[in-house]
Amino acid sequence: MATATLKAITFGSLDDLLDAICEKLQLRPTEYQLAEQRYEGIGTYLDRHKLLSPFRPRVYPQGSVVLGTTVRPKGRQEHDIDLVCELQIEPSAVPNPVAVLDLVQQSIQESEVYRRLTERKNRCIRLNYVGKFHLDILPACPDRSSGGTCVVVPDCRAQAWKASNPEGYAAWFKSRCEAGATALLARAANLPKPEAVADKAPLKLAVQLAKRARDVQFSSNADLAPRSVILTTLFAIHYSGEESTFQAVDNILSGILRSVPATARLVVLNPMNAQEDFSESWREQRQYFAFLSFLREFTASWQELRTASGIQNIKAILEKLFGEDITSDVVQDQVKRLNEARAQSSLGIAGAGILTHVPAPTVRPVPRHTYHGR
Amino acid sequence: MAGRIRRRDLKVAEQRSDMRNNCPEFVPRRSDEGLVWTGPLKPTPLSETYTIEIIYRRRHYPQVWVRQPTLRVKVEDYKVVHIFREGCLCLHAEEEWKPWMTISSTLVPWAAEWLLYYELWLATGQWHGGGEYRIPARKNA
Image (cartoon, rainbow over all chains, first blue to last red; front, side, top):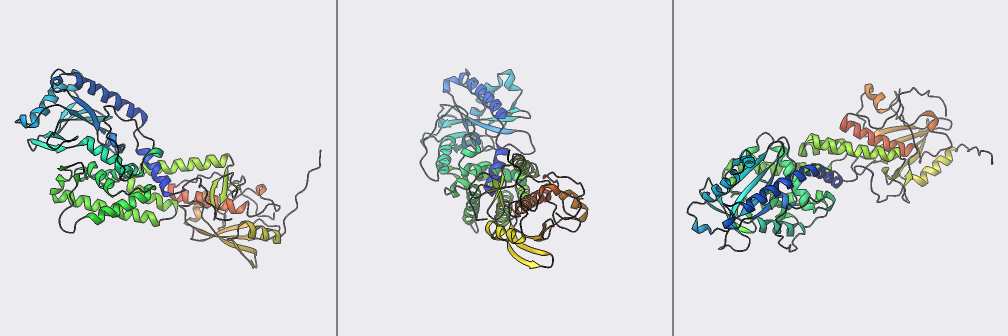
């Protein structure tokens, strides 16, 4: 049996399993279609609303749905779609920024349908589609002093404007997926179509895995969970173009760990608007320490994964990281693939007993046989 | 129509030379029980590497044993995972192996497959490889 580099039929590599996990984390087509319809509905509504039209509203999606890093939620039933409602208002001319949030809320609540779904949050108006998803509508105004695509958003708790740049951030993330190539700023009003796992940049998959690992680890204390935008930013900063998802996560985690300062806390700014501190909540030590312990545990599990052998042992680590339900589903899918190949007699053996598909020149088919016992 | 060609049983020496050609990692030695090959099997890139022993004596079914690592199977589970009472693997129905067949193209890949189902059994608690529980007579091949 000469060693051959043949595609193993199942459990070929950790990347195969990680990609299969990401597959399970993707929104289902029906979930996406519904979100798209609702998104377009509210977008058109806001575009045309008489209270907003003097400010020439521009509605566009932001966050994970634009980045391609959406993760189906664990436990709770809803995922979120974030959208910006940018209004041509000069921020300095508004004495009370929260009035802009009020204005958008008032416009939304004039609709009978939307009124019942509305929930006011600190920076956005949320439409709750119970059991499905929620749409977070973030009012924003162009920040001409910072220029480019920078905006300011009203913050209720602070009773002030807060800096942001969702469009610039999306372009930055896209360029990081190419590990530095300049990505064009895509000013799309539509919800981007979901990308298949096989077509995704490993950075996107790495972020999806990190978000899922976070959801699992913080399932009983969600208030301490590090924000998605922090994980996304840190992962994107430390990604250096690895083709393998496993390797990408491995290098990213060591990069993040190395960047943690010995005394002061880590600060995660919006790379496209340094005035926006994503890690504001880390001023509270409890929050920051929760992140650090998550980071260390994630790294430790990843190192275990690197050296583990035996499907049962690898499955146990993946369960701890990403949850039992999703891991079992992935293993069952691999079993199905194995048994289909066996039923079609397309199972072969190559290398040091590695099962693979036939035909290939160095592969010998496995004859039909029946396990026996007594 | 041409008459059926009766296949000739392979001699122990022929099995030995076939194993040398097709499974060079398997090292043969003589023992009281017959010819014994020891070699590694790793059914998938993510699996453990197992040390297997195949014992063959002419006119007997070859026996396959997993020597390393120790199998984590309790005696009461032998039936479920297809292990004989003495601890070697049950890899085929009687009629599925004939002495004209090479060990390298039958018992070796069957053992690799068994190891994969064994790991899946440890991982899921279920035997996914199918099979029967009919009692095979341990008679000569």
